[in-house]
Length: 202
Ligand code: B4P
Image (cartoon, rainbow, N blue to C red; front, top):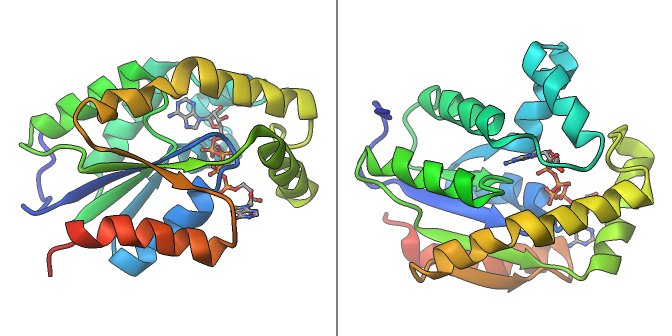
């Protein structure tokens, strides 16, 4: 794949962590502050669900159960999204990659353009706080995966079984950093900014 149109000094940043750890919350703020393009696979799926597209209906089967959407669907959607990204000086990946297969395929897509993941920042939040946050969001989000505690616990389990290993994948390249995900949204934002600042070229 050729990510034509992307400029040379691009930052590729993964915002990582268990469900409800604040990835989406922080990714929006970081994208605005550092002028990065924000790609959230969760948001892309929710858009497809709203449109009642074939992809959306398929994704809903898995998301509603707290399971991951299969890799071939997710990777295909991400590739398509990357090709549609306009000129940007960086991308923040929110909720992707969530499996080793997704990580490897992202690495090869970027390598085709002589690019790579620069940093993975992992928001660390204890399970009980996650359950509390998601149930709270469920009061207004209307998301079927936010309202039922057993589905939330399944999502945490899926994270431990299938996703946590992605941290190790990038740790192997010295790219992974754990970040305390407890505290105010602004405090956590500052912690993340301190790690990203050195990557930003004026
Ligand atoms: P996502 O959309 O990625 O959502 P998430 O993991 O629930 O949430 P996030 O960590 O972004 O939390 P948020 O900031 O909203 O995934 C949803 C589903 O889509 C997955 O389960 C899966 O089925 C599917 N999917 C997505 N990507 C996939 C992939 N790559 N492969 C396969 N399947 C995929 O924060 C949560 C709540 O906490 C909010 O209410 C927020 O206000 C609150 N909060 C945030 N920070 C806080 C803080 N510091 N203190 C207190 N509360 C805080």
